[in-house]
Image (cartoon, rainbow, N blue to C red; front, side, top):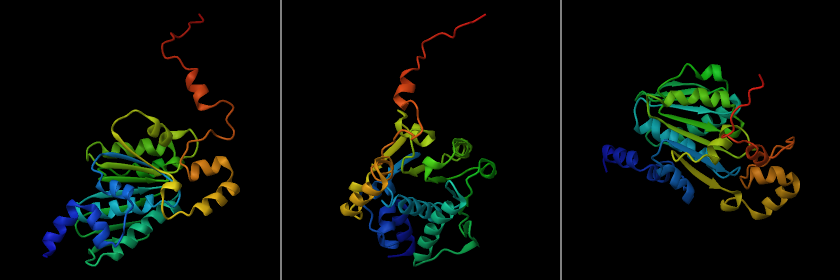
Length: 252
């Protein structure tokens, strides 16, 4: 089979690209992620479920088969962004027909076809210099600040690019929680608990539950949004006390 035929096949089918080229056998939910064609995706997934790996594969696929693409990797800290970037570069190194790199360092890689993959520090000021992103991947999104998230979204205004949020929950707060519970039909939402992942042993989960306690265990492994430990009122109590139909009272 010619290289051109292979390129077309893998361009159209990211699942075949993952399995045949990268040697990665995706779970059924990971196949759903790889086949996703929408604009906005939320992965509310357990620790060690494989969410960062499958998102990284999407980034590599985008860079290879969509020339001149800008892929941004964002995490709460530079160390975490670098970890996701390391997974991406490892996948590039697996390729039997490795693309020529015109730039290659600890924070970014540029390919001969004009595509770039860049790992960004988690600061609102740093990301404002970029525009026209084809794909933005926000790892550990529940820990990313709202300011950074709101600075990222306009980068997709002209490009029509894709946005992926992946994380475990971290309280009923922030944009990750708000987007997850929203009725906005533009979001594709995938929930994967640790109990849904065949690679996570049930005995390990029982030990984690005893060690971590309910608050951490439910969020890290069952993907539940729990109240903050310092909350005086629950999220439901606060939202239930709001009445948008009330007219403001004039004290004067």
